[in-house]
Length: 201
Length: 176
Image (cartoon, rainbow over all chains, first blue to last red; front, side):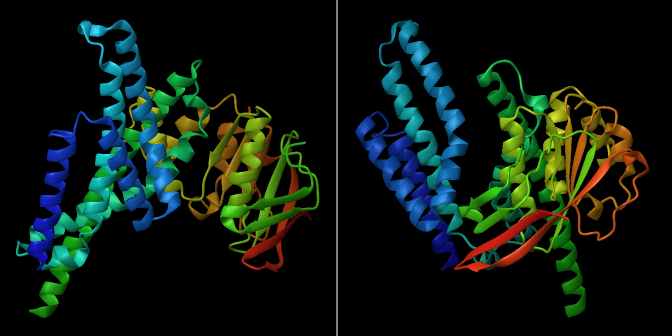
């Protein structure tokens, strides 16, 4: 049953990417807009309005920078192309859609599912650690962002420059957090498993 | 006036503050000690009312939050981006570098910092030359004797639960 669930989740992720990211519906702006709305609605139903706004806020700087570059390329008619704006708008929808779709799909896999997988305990611990760290990481992002907003050392003359510096810091902080969190959780899980295993023996 | 006496509602936290005294958090040479039970909104008051007010008044500040372990990741990121070598730096050294580069700040906010560093005189040693006032959230009932805080006027602020309005907690904030 667990294998079936894993298989279905992976197949759905594959299908989504094949259809909307690399495949036949990539170039259709109206379909991408519909997919975006459906996925955001799904996220809203599965999680909360606050979390949905938070995910959108997380995507906003990336989407905005994509849009700005797309607009510049469009106005410059870079490489003689006149479809930069259309292509940029599609990418601006695909990025949050695929991120949120992945998040919702992976959230359906529970810790119990991982425990039921027919793989070695070492690999199970690895998967559990990853899931736990990324779950925490998502929540902590908001807090990191808040703290970074209080540092005057990040302020520069331009607003966009300040924002870019903030996001660079955010990514570094998240990386440091995930690195340490994964290491610590992994050590803790291994230690508990070894202890329980010895007690059972 | 940074936080004038008024009623402040925080919808998302289900908190309503009845601030009965004016709080001039930019007054010089003052150390504010904020006290009150758990859940009375001391941190929310700092993060949702005091810090936005300081920002609006364009007053630079340093803030060390209650979840310092989380904050340290952002400090590591910030300092490494500024070119500091922080790979083998402990918490104390990280804070020292950060505080020392925050010379433009005039207010220093510490939220239950004594939980991690019961003796935090070092904060005053590092910052007293440029910080004009401190806002300290603490559960300690006594006034800590900070050698470095000599010359600062202590102002005690009490958070008291008045009652509930449905799910909303009404908290009075007053000077003692």
